[in-house]
Length: 354
Image 1: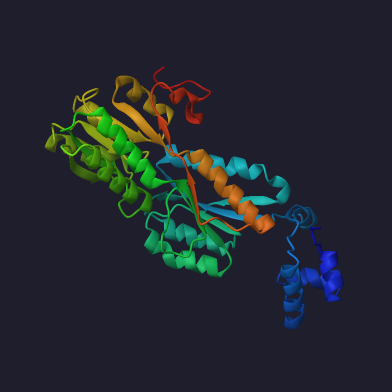
Image 2: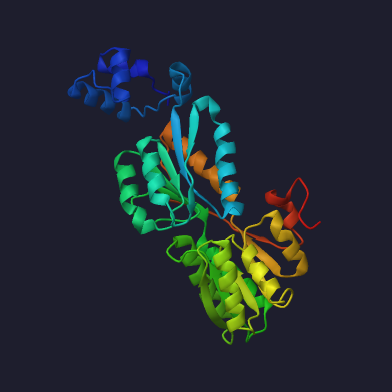
């Protein structure tokens, strides 16, 4: 079917092109009945705006994407941000503009920064929700204002958000639980180190790991779940104390990218090579711990790709009217010492410890 343009709508509505433009872009210099008639014709004929042409004609951004991500854990979220920015540059001809407004870490300052972005009226707002229920009113406000909300890395179930882009947290937790059960003797004790239990991603990974590990190792035991709030000092101290309380632990699953303080605590207790750590994601500072045998595997959440996909969905919606999928799950990848050099985070440049 031939793509309908503004000139076609003007002819069908028997009005000027300027009147159609005012109707399509919500300007006031037009009667309400005429506006409704024009919008009805545009909708019935599948009109989609040519955002590239509009960007060139008005000389300003046509698609504004708000990005609200934590700064910490920066090993992970720097990669998400880079995926956003690099992908957005590919759509420069559409006038894409990224409004980046970071907050400290999950659950700290996210509401304030999200409010600030809403005042800038982006077409799409991408956010990583630490406390999803606390953000529910802001998500509803955004959607009511026709600002589509895409959750990235973690979901906000039960809210009005349009979609989520993330690695499936249940699959991630199960992968870690299955791996741990195969690495340890049947009666081994393990513990989980997570970030923020209110965060949907963290909660689901912990639950899925626990169920899978216990299911595959009935004689094993889950000694404890430690909540480190993605703070390095807090996580180090809590894991050090954990290893003091449970000196016979054989495995640790770290469900966030904040694995370095866990490895430091293992080293401080003299347990390198004696306790097996399954981590999350990959960055060059992890390499020495792979080589020492502390980290035996990591479940990679593909943060760069998460940022890319979120931009693509936002542009498809704003430029072409494509609906944002409710759930976009990526397949997690298993990283081990033998294949870690193939991942984007370690390609190019000098690898730490090698």
